[in-house]
Length: 119
Image 1 (tube, helix red, strand yellow):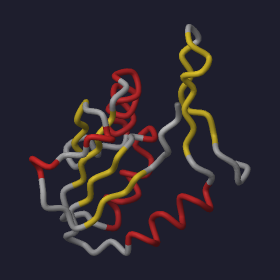
Image 2 (tube, rainbow, N blue to C red; image 1 turned 180 degrees about the vertical axis):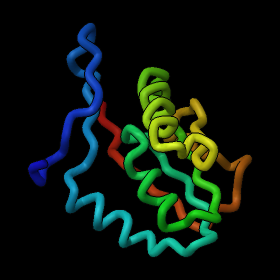
Image 3 (cartoon, rainbow, N blue to C red; image 1 turned 180 degrees about the horizontal axis):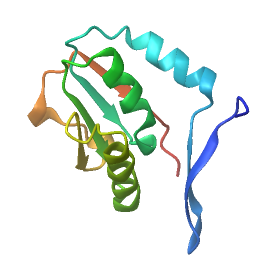
Image 4 (tube, rainbow, N blue to C red; image 1 turned 90 degrees about the vertical axis):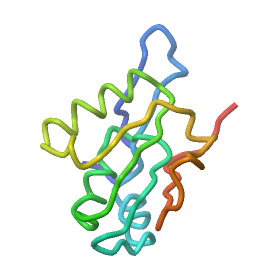
């Protein structure tokens, strides 16, 4: 794998809907920056196919990991990926606009924003 963002989702009906997962070095920096402890609860804004959540679970296996994802196709893909890894019972995916956060689920030890809003 090259050290560049990798495409993981494209809706052929809408070419502007593509989504990438960050380059491996950026993912490493994000995960390191979280400084996750074994019992940390983590809110992830944007699914990124579940890859980052899977890594986070390995570092915080006793914590709660929740993903907010607005796109139903990406949420489904992420659910399937987590099932394949047998992590679906360890990571919760909520269909919701990540930009709105989850104040009803507070507090969180850590929050990770995985992308940027585009217009």
